Image 1 (cartoon, protein in one colour):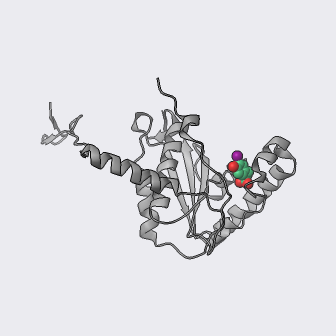
Image 2 (spheres, rainbow, N blue to C red):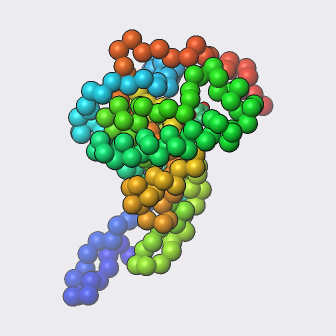
Image 3 (cartoon, rainbow, N blue to C red):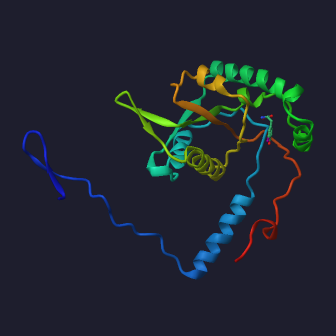
Length: 232
Ligand code: IYR
């Protein structure tokens, strides 16, 4: 069962369906220390909107994508594509197209309630960070794959790509870079500018950068545990 015969009659070992997995194992003391340390680390993460143009070594950019690519996904289909944009001309095109859409959003397409909800963040239609950040990661979701010209379905695509983006944000934070989860809307222009195939739809635009010197962030707070955690 673990071997199969090739077309030239040779027997080779098949990939086994299941392999042993050894989870990390820590003492309870160590588990507590790790839980507290990771909380402190993750709680320090902030969305940052002012970037330095300092270049980022390619090895780091590639490695954070490797980390995102470890996310779980429906039926392990890994229904994502990451486009790493560092070309200044393409960044400029993306900025201009995003600003054109955002101008409309901030001048009529977003409701009064929405604009009020955003007021404390200080955002507007101008997106200079799309050119200043040395890299823009454009994440695409794939509703289906195309294998030998045939459509192959993917499952829980939003959840899967959302998880991959969560991993990506954690990885960016882990290496001391900053980002914001930018959602220009509508964002089909990204598919056009980057020439992605029809079955790839833009999901999030994630600029990656070092923070600008003396960067400021909104004075906002996370919900308390008793607002988000319920025991049964
Ligand atoms: N996409 C717009 C508006 C925007 C929407 C939400 I919800 C935010 O949390 C922040 C901004 C923009 O990027 O400015």
